[in-house]
Length: 452
Image (cartoon, rainbow, N blue to C red):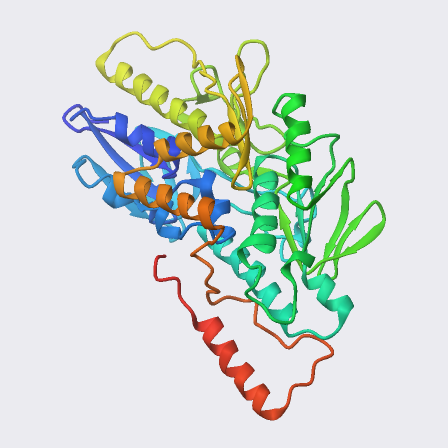
């Protein structure tokens, strides 16, 4: 770096961690380039509510450029990084363009992991992006529409069976909300089916739900889901996912909708740098969050495996990523000022939260635990607090209040996608009816969520 040029910090990823680094680095001696393959910052903890028609996409996502518009030292690029080179101090974009850096922050997030069975992904999509959420919402709603037109009882039962694989917070939240969607929100909307017949099954290979929570809270979550009508299967690993359903303990469970919430893998950042990584691909970072052998490259969030004194790993949640982002910004500032570097990163655990439908949740603060309605209100206030902007906070709060009071979800639009409203088996409509169905199919598939 030439002395009269500002220090160039490249941040890959506009999630919680990457955005926090950009916000905290305010020195005029620093020039920042933030690169993300999407133009928006996503509030991922509420993504499942888009997938289950509770919220619109615009309520949990914000344009990155808008968030950083007043920061003249920040340049935002919509691009995909495909490589990072510590020797040449550059990152490579998908078009071959190389961007040099003085300091690199890798906040590249995570993707779905199918434990060596990537062929399951078309049948059991995961939930990490807005596209994932709208695709899942489409699958859920189309399943009910197809069941309405189906005369074969076995096929109808398959269409009304929803399987969620994975008993962590995402799986628990998905299963509970799908049950409420079927048993409460959609009840009375159809004439040929009773949505109370919908079967929601949550499959967890481990011995209990929410393994990161206290046992008492895990037990409560299981009981609360059962009260909502969710069938909880613990200690049952899935061995196959197909278009026919899932195989659990050697038995086929017919289901038209399968959702994956069982595992994640880090981005290929560790491969780019040939850095040590854990089994999920997270970089085993140094205590100051730098990549081993690269003092000017940091990894944070889901990209990093951060171990605290005592051997406990920092969880891959939004508050942790934000804390790591603030810490990295302090280290960079200290280096540029010539000050002593901050001590090793220390994670301040603010607690763990998971919701079970619209009336119950579990909260574990370590020093205290809560469950039921009071936990749900705590969960709601915490998530609204972390939303960006007063408008979004008000919009989400009003949406939740409406759902809480009426049970109705306003974002029940079937947007265009791969899942066509195909004719189900054992149905032979008359010519006029068929023409009407074709028109309805076109309307359904051509719909757009005006709030996206």
